Image 1: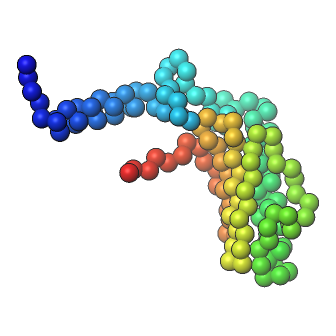
Image 2 (image 1 turned 90 degrees about the vertical axis):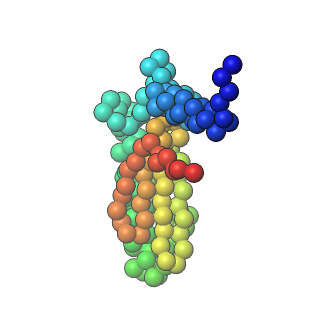
Image 3 (image 1 turned 180 degrees about the vertical axis):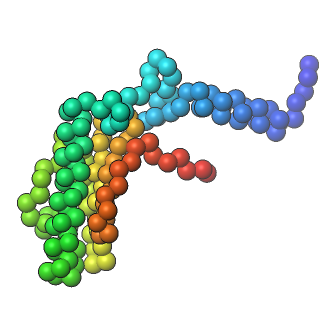
Length: 139
């Protein structure tokens, strides 16, 4: 029987696991393969309903930017969501978080049903960002 050092065995297991992840990526804690591949709700094949929700979320982010800008011009402070007045509603399947202090604000809208984790971000700089598939951070 061939005896391999423990580090060689661990190395082989790491390589095998890496190869498995490359061929079967993980989304929302589930391994994906050709039979159960995730279908992003916002992308090339976006349905009319998903497109409408995405555009509503973008309009909400833009309205928040305008309201925060007006608030800052009037009071020299940014405001919590409850102080921004009438805004468009949060689209179905999206969540909204707004963090504000005297120095600025950050708004995050996320599609909670999208396996690719579509999200919209904006802040006191006034730019709106869209993203999917969160970055993988190395340990």
